[in-house]
Length: 236
Image 1 (cartoon, helix red, strand yellow):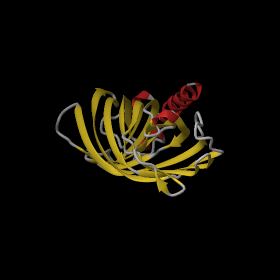
Image 2: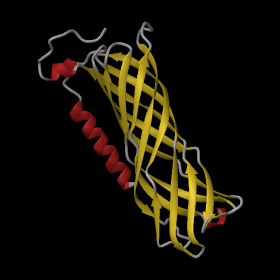
Image 3: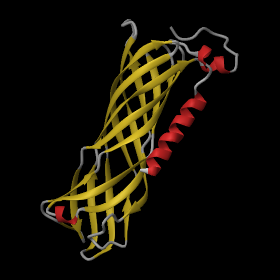
Image 4: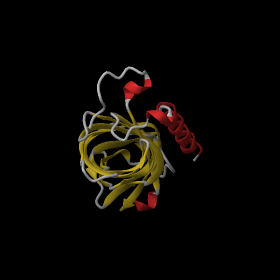
């Protein structure tokens, strides 16, 4: 919990440091920063084996977490933008089905940036819905054995890469400020290996497929205004 609080504080500091003075706010600006509260809800399915032999009925589940997050968006014009979403999160992996009695069988920190190309719908006044598509990369680090009922000496989780779809809306509050709600669905797969267990080498082929649901506040402005160097009008 302390790590999550520290991550949230860091996100707020970064977001605040990135936001320019209030006079730079522009509802048609070319850059937006959002600070969000985010639910990461994996839709997990796994095939588990020991020494290459499948364990019938065995499954695994990755925990749901609520975390702070930050997005950075660059607008090419009034319709098209590219967004970077990122955060840090810690999850547990629990045995399910035939291995449910093992409880927590791993835990890990993740760094899961998502990059999407977005289309923003114009002409709806202060309500600005959008859709997007892109990719997510998840780096797993500080993997642990959890409650370790498997008796593993270590756990290795392969980094994952997957496809993402997105839908959301920004609601203008004026002077460049927005409320935001956003949903992403990602499809990705990873391999988990438990080393030196009582069953030998245990592996799981895991579909994580998370829902990423966010809400928060955004600030839109023009990058050139930060340096008083604008030579062209902002996107309209």
